[in-house]
Each structure stands twice: as C-alpha cells, then as structure tokens.
Length: 146
Image 1 (cartoon, rainbow, N blue to C red):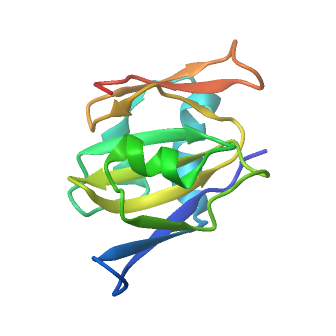
Image 2 (image 1 turned 180 degrees about the vertical axis):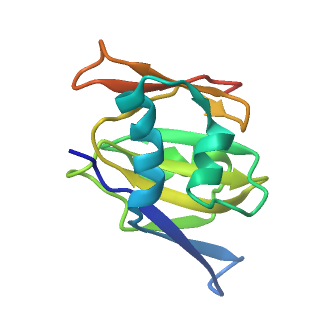
C-alpha cells in the first residue's frame, strides 16, 4: 500500500523579527515517487524523484527527520531558527522530508511507510536505492553532508 506525503505552505508572519510559518500538508506524489524505487528496485537520484513530484524552487538540500521530533531539533539542524512548523507530526507518520534552498523551505513533506533512511542531508545527485532488509522495506538516500 502506498503511503501519503505532504507539501509545504510557507508564509512570513510579522511577529518579532521575521518569524516564518511552514505548514505540513498531504501530497501523495512525492512519496509515491520515492516508493517507486522500492517497488521497482531501480535506483534513482533525489533530483529525479523531486522532478517527478514537481518540486521547484531551486532547492539545494533535502533532510529527513524521524517522528517523534521537536520543532527546536528541526530548526537547529537545518538553520531555520525562526520557523514555526504547523502540523509537525508526533505520531501517525514515519517522518518529515524537508527540501531547502539556502535557509528557505521549498517543501516539507509528511512521510508514511516505507520510511526513508537518510543521515544528514541529500542533494539532487544523491542516490536513492531500495533497502528491502529494513523494517517493512526502506528507501536509502545517500547523504552528502551533515
């Protein structure tokens, strides 16, 4: 069964120093693009997956965070200290996928099973491969840095 994913709506909020709000909402296209790698067993790149899901915005890094997670953990890890994450999951999902362009969030995606295996961040040329040995299968994403 294919899981669902979420897109991001980012809006500036004029409260004390330029706080941004990022809303995480469902978007099945991106997750299906990742799951196709597991189903077909054919490796792709993160750039290929992002293009399939029509992720624009000139993103340069993709991060993955497992649930449960804290807003402060996400902001510290990706350098978005003034960002408020609306609908940040605590249960009911495996993780959150975040695409960035510099320090601007291009898209944030709620990830359901099978989960991604990424430690650090990925770039457009990072390999995406099937990892059938993971719990319920997993999708491995090559890290390019921390």
